[in-house]
Amino acid sequence: MSNRGVTPEEFLRIASVLPEVELAQHSEEWVGLRVRGKGFGYFSEARRTAQIKVTVEERAAMVGEDPEVYGPSWTSGRFGWVEVRLDRVDPAELTEVVTEGWCLTAPAGLVAAYEARAGLTPVKDGSGR
Image (cartoon, rainbow, N blue to C red; front, side, top):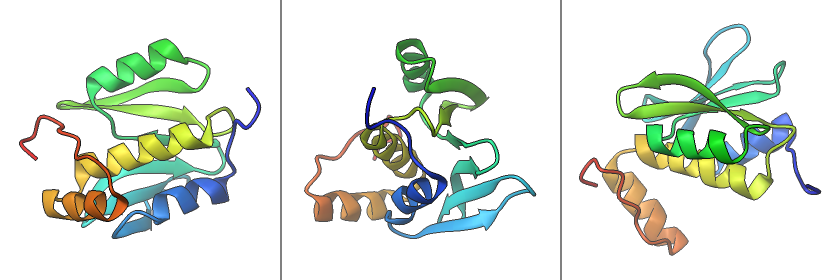
């Protein structure tokens, strides 16, 4: 369990390295993460949590495997947002979750260009990408 937890600054750095990420004040407490105008996450420094877009199936697996780190959040269509407790999450896992949320939201061409630059194998999300 060592090497767990990220600071608010580390969380924002993880999110901000993805292409075209915009941070916008969503409410007094929450900062929204967007790519080309579409939201894929929210962050609250006061609560030390983030809400990240994942699939409903991924959310169920994450919450079931590590309920001390991940909690259920709202559901929107085929997406099941997950609450991430930043003081308990492994930084590498958080990077994967944030990147996947971005991939589920960004336009297919932007995702393909990012994956090609990063040398990643494209991940299909069921949307035809």
